[in-house]
Length: 323
Image (cartoon, rainbow, N blue to C red):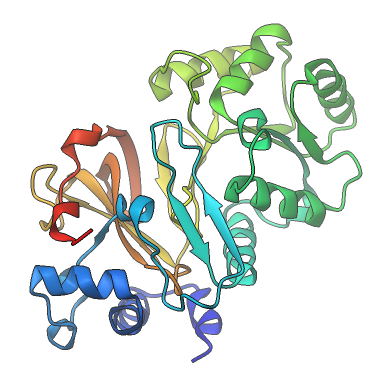
């Protein structure tokens, strides 16, 4: 089946559920790790006919197992930063699916990429290999078609001068950066922005003390003279991203859905707050149904907030697997 033609559509609840159930059956049959997990749960795929009954694979298994449907057919392996210990790895069968996902996802929320100059301030990611975020930003920069678009490591003076130039020309600009780097930059080079979006991707990566998102956004708003700071929610184990245009409330693209489970019960469903379960239909050749380590709150219209993370000792469910 040509899954890509079906995944990246403006789904109705019914079409999303129908496709998700089809992908579930495909992964339950072809993903050895997911199949084993379902077996340990005593879950019979043939008996699962509703979206709410699909089990979610603990995200921790991406650290110890190869979560892939076609083990001998892999194009790239993305890895996490590993700041918390062992790296997660996402084996990707086809990067063109990832490119469709982040391109269509960005344009779903922000319009044509070619309308933007894209400046990426991602030093911690640029200093290692295997980052899916770097790959995404690299392709978005290319597709923007603007000669000024590019990556920045520690060239804050150069970035400041370019932002001033783009502002003076009334150019739409996206400054996307990891949290600590945006803070480092704006503390040294505060400047009012009127035609630019500042988007944080989260994380201090051990470079600065962790602070709550509200405090981070307050500092950035003050330094850039903005009312709203945007956010990107993504991770190594996903091929899709959710975005927030302010206030920390994220919205998913039509092929992604977030729900909650009870923080103390990995198999519970449909809670208003707790551990976040994520359906990412773009993960067609790995696993589309993931129980994350993030704590959050789910609102109507497929929006959600991030409230924190589980401590490593709080993650439950992985002990169902035979290592």
